[in-house]
Image 1 (cartoon, one colour):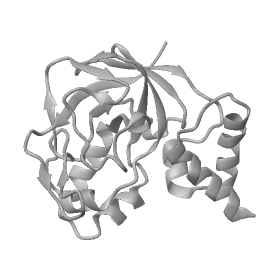
Image 2 (cartoon, rainbow, N blue to C red; image 1 turned 45 degrees about the vertical axis):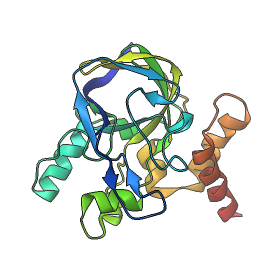
Image 3 (cartoon, rainbow, N blue to C red; image 1 turned 60 degrees about the vertical axis):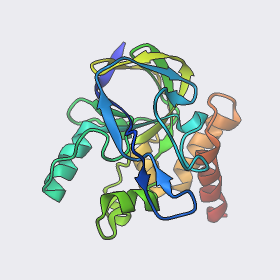
Image 4 (spheres, rainbow, N blue to C red; image 1 turned 90 degrees about the vertical axis):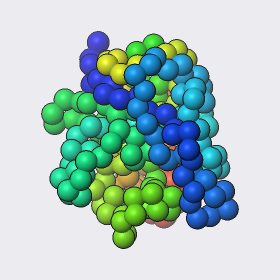
Length: 220
């Protein structure tokens, strides 16, 4: 079994929600680490919260994961310490040098502790994230980095805890990583993923599928 990394922190929503602009008015973007084992079902980590459920959470975005190397990068860029959960991540994973979780193929499947999950696509930074960070043009800066973290769908519920290994179960083989797709939306990459989706060899999450189709349609 190929080990992709190790869970450095498991984070749940802070009990005091963040007041933000917009129709919902509250956000659970502020996550905090827990040392306890956490039960995970098909809607994510028990004890976590998503306030704006139109865009966050649900089965295809049950868990949000970021790579520890990205926080090292942003701490240097921002000249500040970034606590576990500060970007709204549920899991922070320490992966080997030269590879990060954003390099996973869309549709890749992992085992993390007692759960099995699938990488469904990248995070799309929203206005709440920018407000939470309090940095001018933050979303633009974050996007340009091109490593936004990944969303996971839960295929096998169970429990996870800090220190669990992340093991590769399956890789679709289309060769399109999360960071590659997020950065370019290349029609050729879209066709490579859609070919496997249409053949029934993988199922693309609807929130990713619409962008794949749009990329192909733009090409004409």
